[in-house]
Image (cartoon, helix red, strand yellow):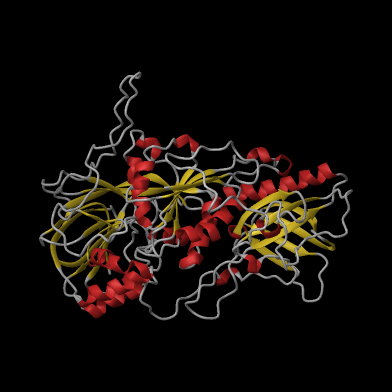
Length: 637
């Protein structure tokens, strides 16, 4: 039996607008326990709210201020406003604080139908003090304690819990690809992301990318000190641009420590699925995955993330956070471009097309095994400030100019995207038991998310076949830097990039202690996240800062039916338990892949690169990823 979490605060409060309703609140480090002291017929007397479902807690000016998530909000037309104290007069000495929660709905009745989250807001009346300042101090202490627990700030004793413990409101820079996936990114921002960001008291600047590598250019120009993080609203391809743009800055050592976050609006959404999985949430797709990741983003906690340095035949170097693919996976990713309009289902269609013409590729795979690990056989801009004590107005970035067409903040009469769940009262409310958080997936299905990546260009990347040297990338040592001012001296040279000390130069033989596999392959996949797509749990054992990649390959001779079974089982992360004799997976620190077939496709993070020999090495914990949960330091090498 788990030990009870220590109690942080206890208190008795009223329900705003219902003087007869009283609640005993107990705050622990992981949960808020709500006990109704005066229950009516059919009312639920006790409710446990896990803090991982809480978005924000803050003082409000009055019981109506939290209505529909608006600090000075008005009730929606035709809806009663929960918590309106009709009987309270101007001499009211009470203070108020509001709790904003996004718990999962009760278990869905139909398998395959998203359960999603509901938005619940509760305003508590603090009236136990002898004066309004005393009540305000109590409300402030409770909101500070909850926010500290959400943000991972260490709490002192009860008497010392003051707002000075809290960091200043965060400032995030959003890059949105409006054409990613099914072109729903801007709709997601309006209806889900920005309302939650404002509720969480976060300032932001939002920029729409206009062409391929637009974000890559912009991150080389930003002033790092103006931002607390960069957030991608797109598929994995836009994050690939941002990471490589940060690594191309002269101050890359500082730049790559900028926390990056991702909100899924593309087709693959692999990294977003990995963030969701790392937080302990069950498999989610579409808007459910989006809300989960936005909730985690608002928590703000970041974890180290491995980057893999990939060098191609021409000497160009790419920094990868997700995968390197050759063969079937790369073919599906690129050939499914023509089906982008159907969203994540493009990978299902692409899988069937590539299965019908299953190819084999001859090559040589060499790798340095991770020590002691067994092989597994197997540009428009919107700038806004948060609604609470906000920092000074931030200047728009680059060519960005302030607009009012998309989002002005939270106008008092704007409906909430979660309107159906507003007006929350603890009377009769219930949350699903914690054991119901993860739903079992019943029956095999063809996964809709496949090889990761979402491109910004409107044109596809071409067919499945490419010639050596046909790809792009960044030349080694070719890094953008600002032009020096005529009045200034030459800037110092940028520090050298991380050295790939485990791999010899391409063209030289690998060290004798490396292992080599040569022959015919159906696919080779180096993956360093748990997911290859939103519903493809390709490497359940992967960790963000493991210091190793997982080198999976399928040898030729596998039947189409067996390969299809592998991908179906991958939706549950069960493909290694099938005992397929053609499937192998080994953790490695570095690898070299030498295609012996003259034509084919290679991808890095779902982005097509030049075809030919390449090699890669892991750099442990080089980047910072916003995961919303404390970093796991127990799974390293």
